[in-house]
Image 1 (cartoon, rainbow, N blue to C red):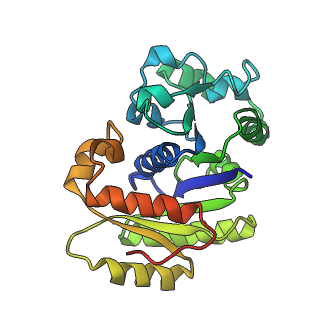
Image 2 (tube, helix red, strand yellow; image 1 turned 60 degrees about the vertical axis):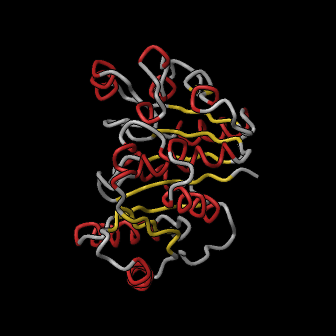
Length: 258
């Protein structure tokens, strides 16, 4: 049975899309059929990370939401473009890709209930093992709807007071929506911090499992804005952490961060 995994954060700038893209690549490389949906509206970044250009994105998720195209027509098989050695498959559904489209979508009414129908259509028609939803940060209507479809919810935060407070609010909302209790990913932890202490503090604070604590890495930052780190640096310690995180999120239990 397919899993719907939702990657979310309270605010922008946590590295959410970079984490999502690297996880999707690892799952596809391991032989899973993975669909990625960029649910965020105003700042779609996944096309850049996967190396897509405008010409490849003929149709988008918003064409589906506006009733112009099917969800399958708005979805690209990007397996060969990302890595033709993958054992599995990798599909991407993007949001608006041009400013003129964004302005049109913001003015046009569309049925958000179609999101769920589209998610399930992708799972069934593409025979997916994993559908990964990369949400828009915050608690807007689209993100809240996406959260309700989660079999696994991963909340990303950075170790600062604003994120700590915002994550607490998000977890309260998640509980009200009856969404599975989230797994937490602490990202970009400064080198001066003890990772195990951070993990214990976050776990105690939110009473949630911590799927991973990812240290700040200059090498990761250099790649993460325009590429997939785990492909460019397969032997890097950060890649090993991502591999453990990928395993954790699709397993029944979340082991302690190593």
